Image (cartoon, rainbow, N blue to C red; front, side, top):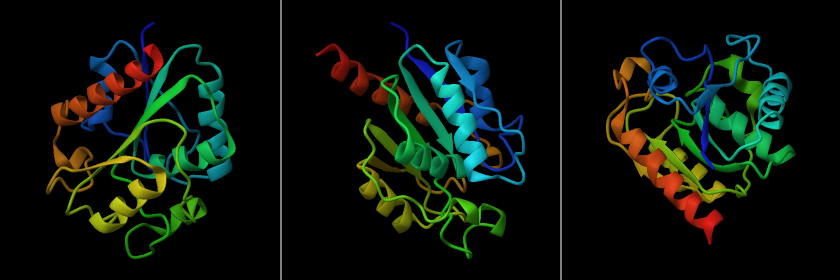
Length: 186
């Protein structure tokens, strides 16, 4: 059975030059969560939209979240679950608890849940991300039981990082798919 990739953008959506947008074009097995208001995020509305999208999935799916969407996935996992979600690639988690790292508009996503995720996950961070310190991103990975990857100085791992198809990220996705396939085939 084919594994789907559910792309989950953060605040402001992922623009034309964002790796998530490139992945949507590249992978036929990818789809995207659309929010009604990308610029004034409401946690409950965003969770409902994510959950509605997940409930429609009838295939194994890996979540691919960026920035604010990472905290969305963690909040979703605190309230919901789905046997179809088999993994998550959590890229550049925005530190929603830190006014010095994130804008006031995301404070509704605070506090960041500290729960162990029920599926394999990888947290990817950059050592010069203005939205989260490397130590804090590592702390999140420990809370969530995620593998932690520091990819060096890549900013917020977004459009400004000019990653295009972000091959390194695709490698993380492939390793996550291999991990989850072994777990489900065994």
